[in-house]
Image 1 (tube, one colour):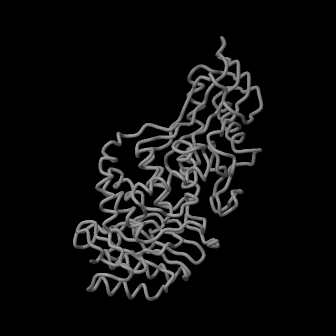
Image 2 (cartoon, rainbow, N blue to C red; image 1 turned 45 degrees about the horizontal axis):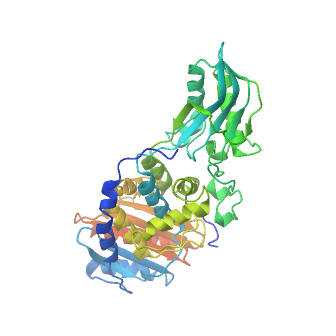
Length: 423
């Protein structure tokens, strides 16, 4: 979600050889976008965009590029880095799609260090090991919140289905894939209400359930409770710790595919999902499961497209994040030329129909034809994405507006997007 705040198991994936085979082409496209310092182009579209830009002041920039013809349609202060707010999520989710792959899943496991005795008694402890799945939780919460996801009830059912009737030991939650910081940079890494969740590799119901000493213990308690509901008694008290070497997998649940996780992140601008994906990138492709490691992976991915945004988080809550309208469009252009392009575009809110754009631009040429990521902080408003114009051309755009009244900025963005769709 976009917030008004002070601007202050590895998984399987579809083959990606084709993705990297296209990188050279994409780099050529990204490098070829003009770098004009002022508005470019002409005609009705230019006049409409220039007029709207005059209402939002010099703290704002815009860039509009026709992907079909390879022409810049409009440019105004397009190279100046600005706070992107939640448009930052485009960098996070594009990296997640490219590195994991759209079909990859995150696997939450139950492992055992013990044996099943006659009568169905598991003699030992069970370890619930998290992989950073942001959907993991109770069936009721997952259905209500996302419509799809991994549930603790499914794990309990798998265990009871194996004939286990009693766990003689404890259920222990393992969140060691990520660090123990619960927030992101703008909160000093402390728990942050703007995330609407608590960061953990084993977050359960986003960490919003009844309090426990730590998220891992909470998740372990929930698994123990689900087992009891399935008629499996658990002798020991739930706790947290690391899974010992040699423990054997007894059950697992997979997250929705990465493409779905990215859609759940972008469509409604979910800060919690974005930060969980960022830590997952750090754990799988970086040094560790930290925000800093994940941000480093995102910056490295952007550099492959000759882009150098300032990235410190996954959600855009930090005012330290900076990028330019031109670089955002270059990112969108690069993604459009790769196999993950459709996944990224489909993850975005649709003007007048879904997500953070459900009530904007209704009854205009943009409705149903423009997919975009919104961004909002106290004095920051941003919009970036794709439009299918009346002409049939595919157009990428980015409007980053800083030091603005958010309402005024949104009106300007809507007029500009409508003009792009009409062109």
